[in-house]
Image 1 (spheres, helix red, strand yellow):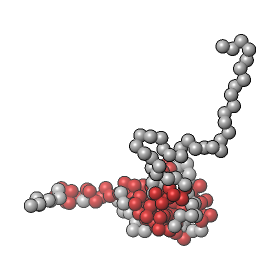
Image 2 (cartoon, rainbow, N blue to C red; image 1 turned 90 degrees about the vertical axis):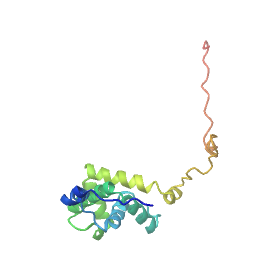
Image 3 (cartoon, rainbow, N blue to C red; image 1 turned 30 degrees about the vertical axis):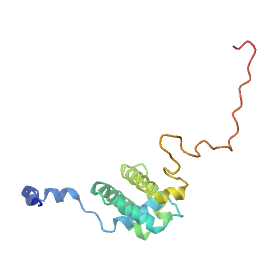
Image 4 (cartoon, helix red, strand yellow; image 1 turned 180 degrees about the vertical axis):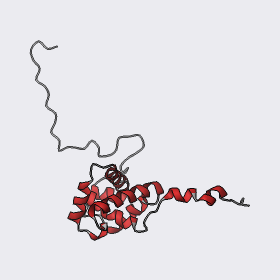
Length: 160
């Protein structure tokens, strides 16, 4: 039968654990969707894919804190709420801090989570592991028939 579990009273007394977490907005996934769309404007992706990716990225507290900090910085640059600005204004805001570490964090997180979703792979034409058979070469990997044959180098006299 299960063993009773208890939290460390020292953590509960001084709120040390909770103070390290930070405040993350409940709207963060929706805000992050707007930011991701500004960074990688794939118009062919459905809304549910964007929201699913943003929600997955924001489940870990460390990533969510970095996303929140980047979105807060972008909101500061824009001077208003991210969800209320048109796409060109959002893009200009992103460009205004593209050299900052928070921007690079947002871009890395976006790329990492967006392109890890098989629904995005199919839209980009990537098949994943489809066609792989054990240790053999992936099917279709050497089928670039459209490439011209390499030209052989003409041999010069006296060359051995």
